[in-house]
Image (tube, rainbow, N blue to C red; front, side):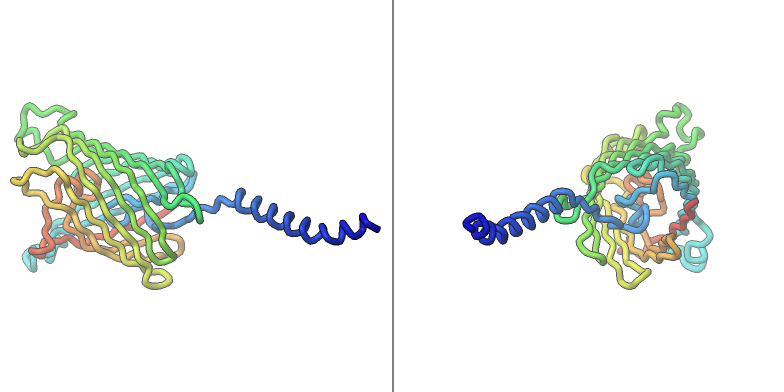
Length: 279
């Protein structure tokens, strides 16, 4: 009888303890990743923390028309365009590699995930990015002593993003880049910048995107400026079509970070788009 009474009083406590233990186990094993802070591989010009899935091959066409400031004489930029053709491959789920060519440069890069944003856990997605560009615009006729190494620019970025909600994602990108050759003798070869970017979803398939990069040690006499880009993303059947206005006609990292000439205040901006196809 005593044993039955003891069981009667202890059974609820045992049940509560079991529930607490199961809840604790669930909390421990749940490691839910926060996905899709950005739908496209780039915000506009700035790389996003999105990577290609393992085995996915992307063919990407990025186009920047000439400055709309050219007016009717330059058909509002349509007569003077820069086009980049890129192939990008998901070597691993955490590693994406690419090779690209435009009128301004050849560009090769690797992007690799260091940490995922975790629901109710780690607050950010952290991705590393490295690229090397070969400058096509330097002419041997102007620089007869130029070597191949003079054409190279190296870029290293740390991409840190957070998805705050289904609508809003923001990203920060501390950046170091080194140009083996600079035309302004007062400019350091090693340069620093910090990029900012974001995405805000305004409809089921549409979002507004913006990115900006602040150069931290540019010489005051330089003709180059900080790039600002604003545009929209349209999701179409698993693909993203990006349309935007930007102050940079350069598409590769070394181009838009170090050699942006446009100026929003003077209407000197370029219309462009990024179009991708995945296989």
